[in-house]
Image (tube, rainbow, N blue to C red; front, side, top):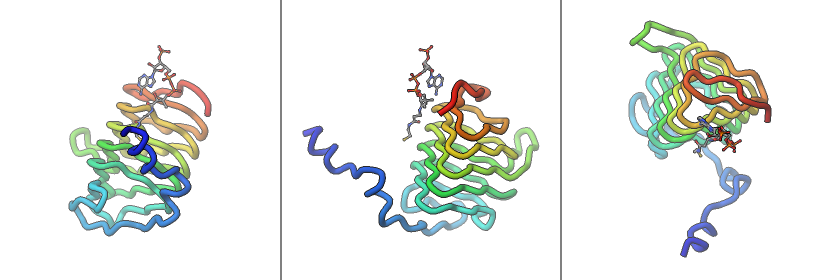
Length: 142
Ligand SMILES: CC(C)(COP(=O)(O)OP(=O)(O)OC[C@H]1O[C@@H](n2cnc3c(N)ncnc32)[C@H](O)[C@@H]1OP(=O)(O)O)[C@@H](O)C(=O)NCCC(=O)NCCS
């Protein structure tokens, strides 16, 4: 039974062969059930994979590079009204953001870096690193 299900999960290369940018309407769930406010501020790379219930506020710009993977239930904020912070968020090529993470305004996550699940990222993360925690700290290299 489980083998049957696993057989239906395509390997990464196969999954993204037919990748197409989904339609994105302000504040409405995409086909994959993630939501963008101010989509004019979003630059979305190719073969990106964004999990369900992720929320992106692109009012001050969010740039997501090619091959970036974002887990479900993440929040990507270019504006945070609670603490009055604003700034473009940049997720560089092939970085990965674990589920339930929060990316704060002005943060850049470097190419190929991985952010662990349930992280609060309020500072830049250099390329090629593994970082996690609240606040997220670099814990290793990839
Ligand atoms: C960060 C991550 C990539 C590290 O994976 P890994 O290299 O296999 O690390 P390990 O599981 O060996 O954990 C190493 C240590 O870090 C801790 N750790 C791992 N991930 C953590 C996280 N997100 N937050 C806090 N601590 C974490 C582990 O408990 C372990 O601690 P210990 O040494 O005291 O036992 C992974 O744990 C993670 O969070 N992946 C995201 C998964 C996800 O969100 N998937 C869904 C989207 S598809």
